[in-house]
Image 1 (tube, rainbow, N blue to C red):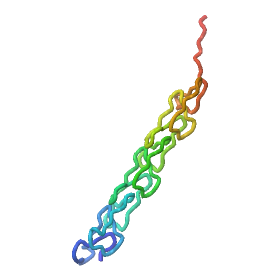
Image 2: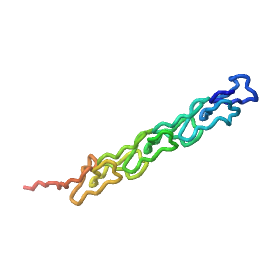
Image 3: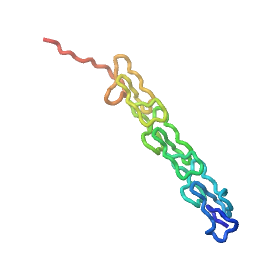
Length: 171
């Protein structure tokens, strides 16, 4: 009889050499398989990149695979993440979070003075002058009160009193 990971593709096996390996993306955990249909496709969220397999590998964190019978998993795109093993899809970063890199397990919080209003984004934006965001993870900036403004060079983390330009008297 053919061992695990293989099947017999002939009427009668003369030796184990007559057994054929299940293809990449497929496996069989049983012995005595008599047809290629005994090889099972790896489920979504799993893969197998070797022939003659007796099982499948789970997609690691930061990757996913939505198809059955796959030979690998795909990195999550920027703006996406996957914190679980064996995932069939990546998850979008929520507003207030972003992810610049491929294949990540988490999203980053927008820093103070920065925001991201849309989901699944690979970056965040600095609050404009006159607006602020005083805590990480902001999905929008807030307008400063009348007579107050924010620092333009750092992204507004707080509003400060506006300073009027001083004019030297003409003598």
